[in-house]
Length: 201
Image (cartoon, rainbow, N blue to C red; front, top):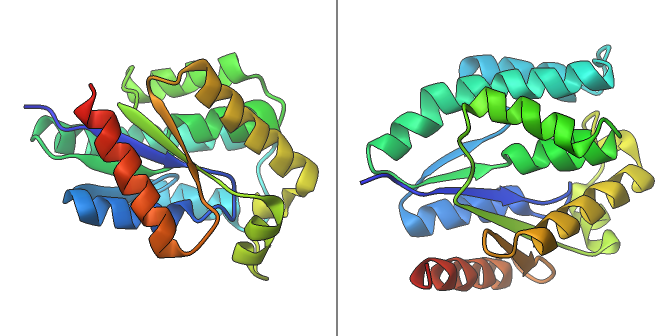
């Protein structure tokens, strides 16, 4: 039996990392993240997100994240799925499409194609996007921002709009969950939505 791959997505400040952890705990799933999840991926994460270093140009950013994803799928995600374990990943392909494809303006189809090559065609069985208002996102981000979090409001709005558009275009594979409210309230919404999705498929 093959496990299920669930990607938890959302713009910066949405609380998606916390919700990914709580969902993995509820499901008894492997929890991992992108960029990261492997030693190589974590090194790439530092290069991409470091606010003080010389950041990569936009295309290099997209390619570095895809390289981290290729390693992540090969070392962590696919072996877990093939062993029958569910996997919850904090970000996956859809982050690249939203952030680099739309946010950076590199093109959704182009970035998706690079990710498809990186994952050898593996896609998430379910994408859960945590959707919050701007004020909530700003309050959750706090003061120390990484390089991508520093990209500004216009960038964030392009990312949010991209997530919402992708969810509308593929409702059978996406769940949009209201991320406003307490951690526990949002976690309950996520759990109910995910259980409902898999009980109907």
